[in-house]
Length: 187
Image (cartoon, rainbow, N blue to C red; front, side, top):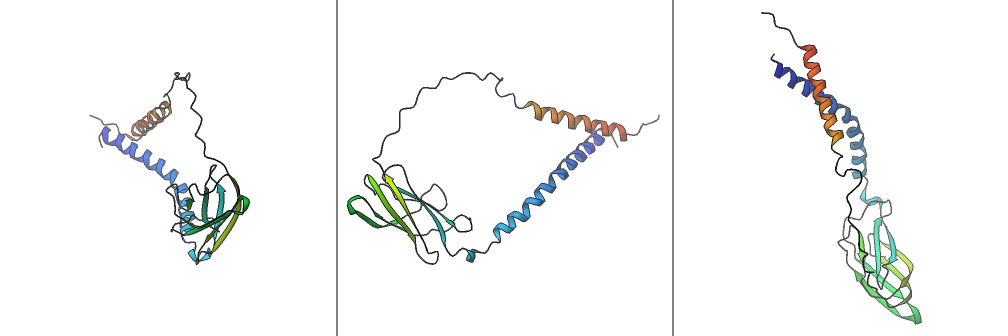
């Protein structure tokens, strides 16, 4: 075996030992992921609906299964509201929003004041939630404050050295292994 082959063999042995040290963590994570996927969909006959104001004249709704799983399919939620002076809004059918699975928003449907909002989901995931929402007139965000740009005092971007040191240690270990197991040739 030549010297180069010995060094390469030692490097591969080092990589194999490193990967085998990480294998138990991966093996423990796999059964947990499989158990979460195997949860029966029929177990959640209802939805958990979290109703809140959006800070202006709308309502936001987060819909999840009662067991905590996120909602994967589209559900047609319906909003009704009773406000100040007996005003009534709805039924308003809500559409899912791109912010995430199970996130719904009404847009600006309420006028300023305190509203009692009820959101319901049809069968088979029949659910209903009621919340009191304080609607406010929409406001524009405050102007951003200027930010001074300064160079970081810690040297900025010097976080590469631990990886370089680890690489050097691996190469040195591989060469040491190659030297220990190398044969001396006699002429």
